[in-house]
Each structure stands twice: as C-alpha cells, then as structure tokens.
Image 1 (cartoon, rainbow over the protein chains, first blue to last red):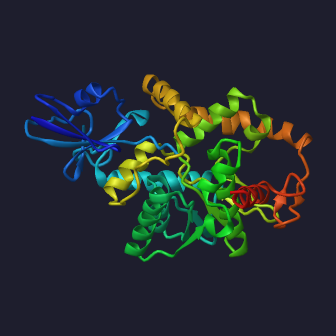
Image 2: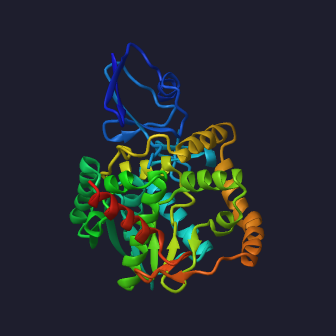
Image 3: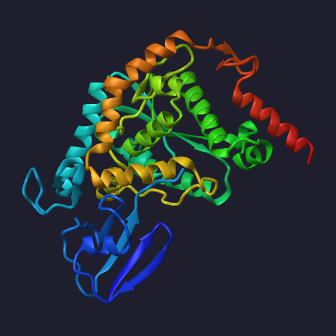
Length: 65
Length: 304
C-alpha cells in the first residue's frame, strides 16, 4: 500500500499502486504547482517514482486568508 | 528531472520556467528572484530599516528568512487578531520562528485597542476580511511610522498579486489599478510599502519553507470561507496550467504597459486626505475607518 497524508486537513488515503508523483497529483485532481509532494525529507518532482510502502504527504499550497 | 544549474536530482519543478532545481540551487534561485524584484522596482536597499509583517503563514515567514539571509536590516511585527485558537497558533509559529533564529520581532494585539476581530465581526455589516485587512494595514503602518522604519514589507506573492489584479480588472477599478504594484511610495505618515515576493508563486514559497526548514501555519483563517480571492486564484491557476508563465507575464505586462495609464487617470481625480480627528492618521473623511470601527465595536459591546 501507499499511504498519502493530505495537508491541510489531516486526511489520510491509501492506494494499492501509484507509479509516479504525477499520477498521484492526477488522482487528487491537482496541478503540478498546486501542492508539494513530500517523501520523508525530500520534495518529489512529478516524474519521480513512488514505491510500494511509501508514505507521502501532499501539502496543498493555496492560502485562504 | 535534473537541476538546470548543477545537473543533480531536481527537487522542485517549475513549469513556468520550463525548468527544475535541486534544493541548493532552488534556494539560490528564490533569493535571486527577491533581489531582482527589489532592484528592478527599487523596493529597498541595505540602508533601509525594514519592518516585515508576519502572519505566521508560509509567505511572511519565507520573506523574513530570505531577507535575513540576504543581510537586510529586518524586524518582524505580528498582529494578534484575537481569533481564539487560530490566532494563538499563528502567534506561536511567529514566536518560535523568530526566537529559534534570534530575530527581532514585536507582537501587537488588536484586542488591546478594542478591536478583537470576533467583536469587530459582530459589530460591522461589511465583509469581515475587508475590515480586518484595513485594521492590519493601519497598525502595520502606524507601528512602522512611529518606530522609524523606512519600509514595510509584506509576504504578498505572485498568486496574491495576479488574483488582486484580476479582481481590480473585472471591476475596472481605476484607482486600485493605478496604485497596484510591488512598491507604494511613502508619503507623510504612510511608510513605503513593498512586496518583495511578487515574482514568486505560492508553490515556490511553500517549497522554500520546506527546504529552508521554516515551520509555518497551514490552517486557513476560520473567517475566510468564501473569500473571493481564493476563487480568483483557482481561476488563474487553471490558466497557468494551460499556459505556464502566464501569471508573471500578466503581472509584469500590467506594470509595464497598463499601470502608467491608470496612474495618469487617477492623478486627475485624487481625493484629498485629511487627518483623522481621533488618531491623526490620514483619512478620506473626518474620522478614519479604523476609528469608526472601534466606535462601532464599543457601542455594540456596551449594548450587550
């Protein structure tokens, strides 16, 4: 499984398979610059591969006041 | 994806620049964009004493960090709006950030001046975001003026600026279009206002905070639901996805070709400012908007 934490909101999702960060953005209906894709202490560009067992944080960046 | 500069593994992809950067080169790019904007529009130089408006969010803390790294003379000011846990959290992020880095900062509480935002919300009929913004601008400027700062810097980024430009254009608001830009000159009791992050997007400030290890607040203001600028940002974001680089072109094009015409038109019909009878700060009427709001809050509180 791939575990995805969504910020802000603290929601957690799981996916059986996602190949790349771009695929994850697509699944969440997000554009490339709508969110940071974080794995551990690194940022992932959309072409980076995501592996089974990864824990990913998706931090949307739009500020709302 | 490889870093454009050093060919290491990229951490940040920037479709608007058709490029990507590794962490180290991205931080350099970010600082370069701030310096480029500051130089191009003469925002400030190293002789300026700069007050940085700190909300506790990513943009203002990124601004404080990058100006510190660039060795500008900066001091932070956080305005505590008195909105329960939301304001406590914001204040906590600012305090932790500044104390950890040994940076000078001040905290001003609107409740101390009879303007806790929940009380203001209960007393006024206008949208609270508009009134809150006015109160914050008033106290940031007042503090800067009374403490000898030569520039007041805010964390407005390219997304904020293009959303505002879009809103002003939809209304063809000539006065706002004439005064919009990364620098508003100081005059009288108005301190020069600058927006050093105007060339950088929210994505870039968020990436900067992550890579520079700046802990910041992520929750939205509890009163900001339905704010029109959020909708405008989404619209502009959709356009940017189709045409990467559109936002900076829209904004820089406006500064170069559009704003001068609106500035010229506004000079003809400028309303004279007078001193507020209560606080002495510039006002369009006998009593300024902030003093009028304070009066409304006092009246409402007395009537409870």
